[in-house]
Structure formats: structure tokens, C-alpha cells
Image (cartoon, rainbow, N blue to C red; front, side):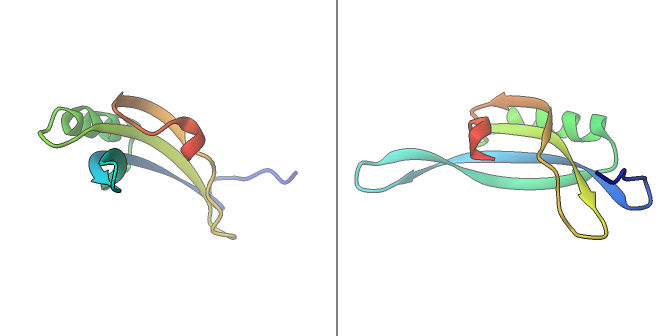
Length: 93
């Protein structure tokens, strides 16, 4: 497997929020992505997730990082920094 260096990959730090929406005839609550914010550091993404998780109407928030291969555009699986409140199961990613 080829080794990646900083010139071919880029790390993205993301804060993603979730809201609950009522769907279907049964009126079941499902999680939907609310907002996404991108930051240059892990601490910025984590701090935003902590603030957003306390906001009214926010069911939960994740802060995570992904690595993008700039030559192919492929993105790695997320590495979670913090998961707060009601968030999707890891299998949903």
C-alpha cells in the first residue's frame, strides 16, 4: 500500500449537528443532519459541537475528522473527537 504524505492528503475537522424530525404515519422521530461546519483544528470542531449540542432544537452533535486523498477525492472513515446527545449509531456512517 502506498504511503500518503501531507502533499497528497488533507485532514478535515467537522462539526455536524442533528435534529429530530417526525416522519411516517406512525410519527416516529428520526435523526437528520442539521448543520455542518468545517474547521482547521480538532479543538475548534469539538468546541463548536459542545456549543451546538446545548442549543435549543439540537438533538445532538458530532465532532470528527476525515482524511481526503487529494489525488482521488476519496475520504476516510470518520474518526470521532466527541459525540454528544442523540447521534446516529456508528454503523450509519
